[in-house]
Image (cartoon, rainbow, N blue to C red; front, top):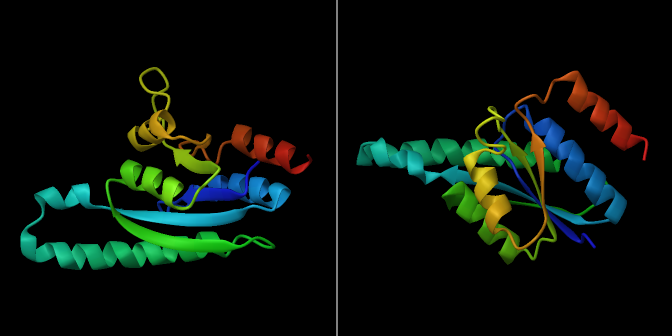
Length: 156
């Protein structure tokens, strides 16, 4: 059912929880994992033109670090990494299509549940994806509830 899992990462420490979920799915299914980092070029709109290459290079370096760290967490499955540039939601959706992903596992910041259940990137991916999307709330990644859920999943 799940042969290829797409794992977008933003490089934050909170992604650890998302990686654990992706590891669990990939490990159980023997799925390949594709780790993706997107350099969000929407932030460049307010930069002076001469600063764009410097910022792009710095963000690409961050992307390499983030994808390498996430990829290193997987054992016994094939892992590839990629860095793209553009609108994160659009690039995640494109990567899912390009890699023939069967599942996207991604974090969401959904900080205010009374307004939006998901962050804007996650919301767009969930809404437009042609494959299932597993979202993991990273806003409370260190909470006991999330840790208990991870512990319960590891018993299965």
